[in-house]
Image 1: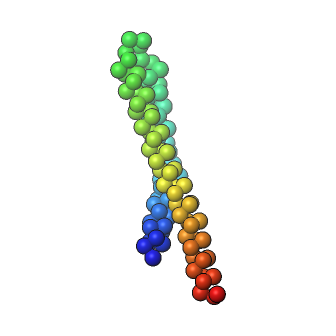
Image 2: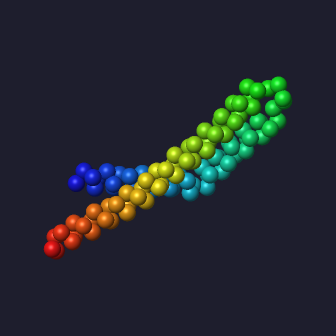
Image 3: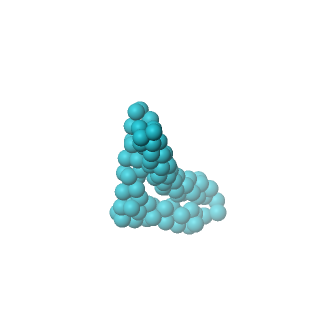
Length: 96
C-alpha cells in the first residue's frame, strides 16, 4: 500500500510540474531570464570574466530548473506505468 501511495505522490508531483512547464507566464519568464543572461555574457568585455562567468552560471541554473521539473514529469510517467502494472497484477491475483 505504501508503494502505491508513493507512486500516487509522484504522479501528483508530475501533474504539478507539468502545469508549471505549460504555464505561459512561467515559460516566458524562463525565456526572458535566459536571454537576459546570455546577452549579458555576450556583451561582457574581454577582461570582464566575472560578469561573463556569473551570467553563464545564471543561465545554467535556469536550464537546471527546467530539467528538474522535467525529471518530475518523467518520474510521474514511470510511476503511472508502474502503478498500472501493480493494479493489473492485483486484479489478476484476485481472479486467479
